[in-house]
Image (cartoon, rainbow, N blue to C red; front, side, top):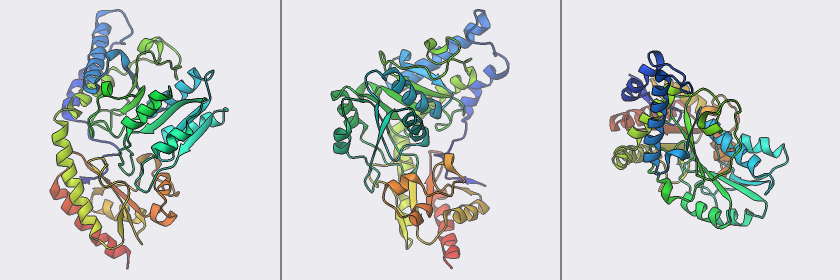
Length: 377
């Protein structure tokens, strides 16, 4: 039986989520923008999902906008704010360890005349609040950081960053794609203007996401067409996907502290097992880390060879972001931590959720130890 330790890449669609979605894939398939009764039923289900998500996140339903996923949400946040505030300034601040949905959006804007500051991080992956403050100028219109890193699991101090942004009157966007379901999120207690989420990271469907946009935040639409999502995000609504996202968020925040404790115990045991092996080092923070994230560099072991051997044992893992699988370049995140090209390439990412077990942790640890011995010969 396969063991999946790559839950940061994607997650299994839960049965409860699928059951909510199914009727709206083949029976109640009406376009939610139409006026007749079946269409209004679809519209009602969309609004019900909006309510569920806003309740789970501590915000207003009017602040929830449905997208096609985390990448679209990130693109919209960066490009939409940059365009809407162009008359105020053209300076954006982000960090060197962001997801490529953020970084490539920033590069896109640089080519069009915007200035972007890429904050450094320390060996654990934390940005410097002092460097952030020193980087803000009169032209700064946007700060964008992750809540938690997808590769190394480091949890950034978004409360402090948000306070700085508010004091300086700068819009603050947070990429929370990896955090939802893994950390408590209460938007009413955060100085955050925009936040991105994805369905398939929380046992929901792929192809649907959310961008939280705080009321009165001016943002240019990324997609143009119809009047869906209050004319801010055009395109026929993915009714079944939105219903699935609503249910997935509802389930993700249920007993979240209990799930965090359970997953953290597995993570800590996995870290303990792996660090007992010579030449294995942990990447990222030990204390402020996602409950299910383990990222290690294994000296003298090529990560791609490790993944092939693990796959032969029906164990799913990764060497970094699933979005960059196949890249021969070392991880930009690990390079930003100060790792050499060799150690950055020799990394292994293992990510767990509440469906994994301690027995699986022991089995995977045992197999990794065996494979390291083989590959180091």
